[in-house]
Length: 298
Ligand SMILES: [Zn+2]
Image: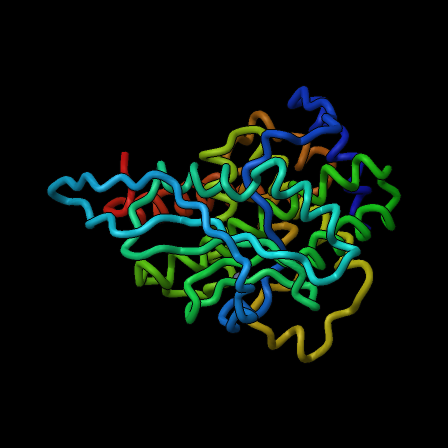
C-alpha cells in the first residue's frame, strides 16, 4: 500500500515553509486534466473580450520572429453554478498574469488564446484548429471535489484545486508549444506535455511550481484508487494515473534529491526509480531548454 500521500504534502509544506493563504491573489495560471487536447473549441461568445499584452517585436539573429502573443479571452458563463469561480478568475486576473509571464518568456509565430469557461464537460484542452488553450470550470470543480472527498478542508481543497489546475494548464501549454513550434517529440506526447509542465513549474516557478506538481500528483494518486484501469484506459495515450503520480514525484525528487530525500525514506518513491530521477530530470530540463531555445526572448 502506498503511504498516505497527504502526510507527504504536510511534511513538504513544512519543509517549504508554505502557509495557507485564503486569498490567492497572485495566482499565475489555471488548468486541468488532459484529455481531448485536439478537439475543437465551442463557438466563441460574441461578447468575448480580448485583452492583449504588450508585444515584444525585437528579434535577434538566431531568434524566431515574434508575430504573436498569448492573449486572454473572457466570455460569460452559461451555467450559474460557475459564476463565482468565474468572477474570482476574472477579478484576480489569473489568465492575464499567466499570459504576461508567458509573453515575457516566449516568442510566438501567431497569437494563442487562453480562456476559462464552463464547457459542459470535465476537461482542459488545446485546440490546434482555434489556436487556443481552454480550462473548463467543470475540471476545477472536479479537482475541488476530489480533494474534499479525500478529507481535505474546504480551504485546503480550494488551494490545491488551483495548484493542480496550474499543472494541467501548463500541460496544455506544452501541447500548444509542441504544435505551434512543430517541436520534434519522438515519444508519447502526453508524457512530453506532463514533463513540459513539470519543467516550467519546477524550474521557472520555484516553490509555487513544486506545490503545483505535488497537487497534481496527489490528484493522480487519489484518482488511481477509485478505479481499476480497463482496456480502454490501458490503450489510452495518457499514462495511467499511477504512472503520472510516480513521474511527478520523480521530477520533483530529481530536481533536488537532498531537499526531497523523504520521498524515498518515507516510501513514496521506490529507491530503484529514485536513483534514476536526477538523470531523468536533468534530461527533461536539457531537452526543453534546447527545444525552446530559439523561441525564448531571454
Ligand atoms: Zn494532454
